[in-house]
Amino acid sequence: MAMQKAIFGGGCFWGVESLFSKTPGVLSVVSGYGGGHMENPTYKDVCTAKTGHAEVVFVTFDDKKVSYEELVDLFFRLHDPTQFNRQGPDYGPQYRSCIFCFDDAQLKAATKVRDRVQKYFDKKIVTEIAPYSNFFPAEAYHQGYADRHGIACHVVRAWPQVV
Image 1 (tube, rainbow, N blue to C red):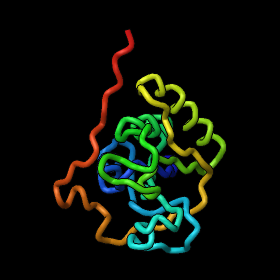
Image 2 (image 1 turned 180 degrees about the vertical axis):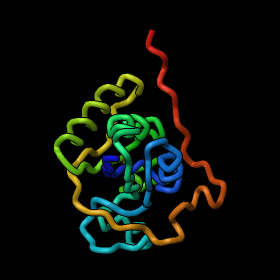
Image 3 (image 1 turned 180 degrees about the horizontal axis):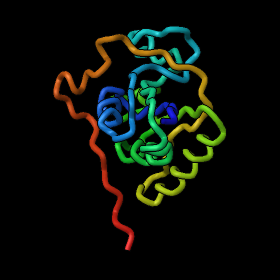
């Protein structure tokens, strides 16, 4: 097994965590905060929109069972990457669409997938693709929240069949 890691932010982390955790090859998913400038922020801190963090999920996966590109493709299907600093009713920079990459290979792969799926959107994809800077796990009550409470705040769209 070759364990790898990835970080994605697609609005509220509850639904993103839930969908990634059900993906074959994904070993664990932790909701948290990434990309900001404050050490160990709390949910209350992040909600001020002053810490620079986004709600993200830290995904650990077996790349023998699911590739990083497949996870990036899923990420683009489970939210609207054309919405700037929001997802549905949630708005602010903490809800921005983002991918924080651990190395150049991830940066290239994320950019490649973004460019490939752009054709499925009427508007420009605004997802931030940036090098990893930090990750702080969210409070315990956020972990597994959507599944514990039966919430489905994200759905996975299917790409049209290419004929």
